[in-house]
Length: 280
Ligand SMILES: [Zn+2]
Image (cartoon, rainbow, N blue to C red; front, top):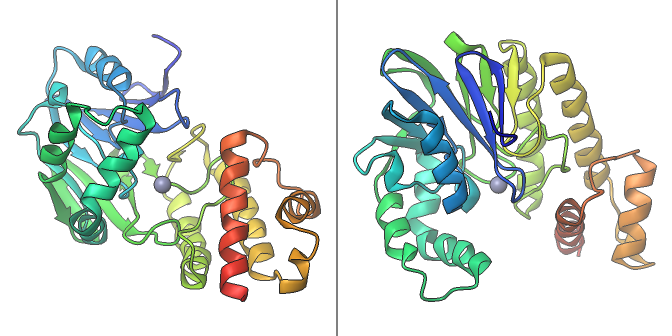
């Protein structure tokens, strides 16, 4: 199997994209495959489709309305049902153009023919309420975990003892908040929810980074909590030496190891900028 794939269980494979280390969950059933957060570049789509071939993709799920967790390819079937939370569907309804444009800006090609394809696929998402559902002979618990983004959802598959935790519990980046004080409060509450969900899974798959067992996931949860509480405790005066100085001091003070790549440092700076705005 190529290095983009890891297989924590025989019936559960994770594809990790090169960009942002975004994870796609690939669950095997007797009839075909289930995809969670079906990646976002053509190379990702082709690798995943080659992996699942010749079996059909039965259903897809998206944890939240950021483009790297949301897109879909005709390689997975044009009519395949796909689900997200009501909050995620609301984000897509109101921000579809921004979501697609942000993604297309990555490729720096304003005439990208994929634009209409993405628009078409986003229009096919339908919403699932929170709670336990039975789809394609498997059960899935849909749990709201806002904070990083409104509408963000965790999917717990009891038959696979696997929790897809969206953009939380990463080992490669600190928490990223949507920008408001309320998001920070929501995120801290979400950590309580995640603490309970971790206890029901053997594998915890973050949106970015490596899958974790429960003890590793609990350690990440405590890192997330330390980071968010330090953000919550910031004062205006802390910014007096400038953003970069505060950013370095902040990670040293709480011993945060995950802001060490250029992408994760950007997330960290954006969180501090958001804090500066709500403090003023
Ligand atoms: Zn995200």
